[in-house]
Image 1 (cartoon, rainbow, N blue to C red):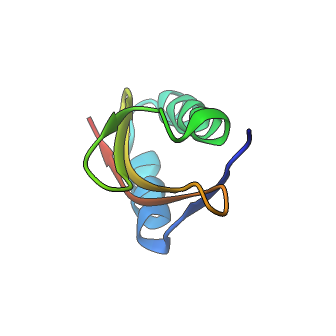
Image 2 (cartoon, helix red, strand yellow; image 1 turned 90 degrees about the vertical axis):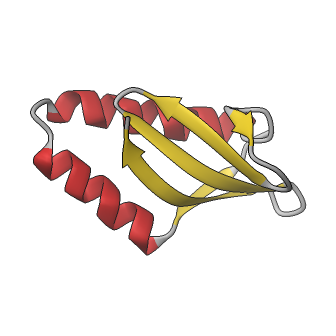
Amino acid sequence: MRFTVCSRPTAERKLNEIWNDAADESAVSHAADAIETELRSRAATAGESRGDEARFLSVAPLAVYFDVHDDNRTVDVWSVFRV
């Protein structure tokens, strides 16, 4: 089953900041694409549980915290950072 991935504005701004500051923008882009692909296809089991709906997923050089909402098949990415 597919999930719709939504990022909070603060997460989008942080991803843009990381990309703009990156020595290798391509690595950041590939990681962001891999994270989104993973979340779209299997969000409920992607990464590691952090209690309730919260989960953590890392694809170097990025990591995200997100919530999974099975009832409406959405993912809410609320934090992005460099690892």
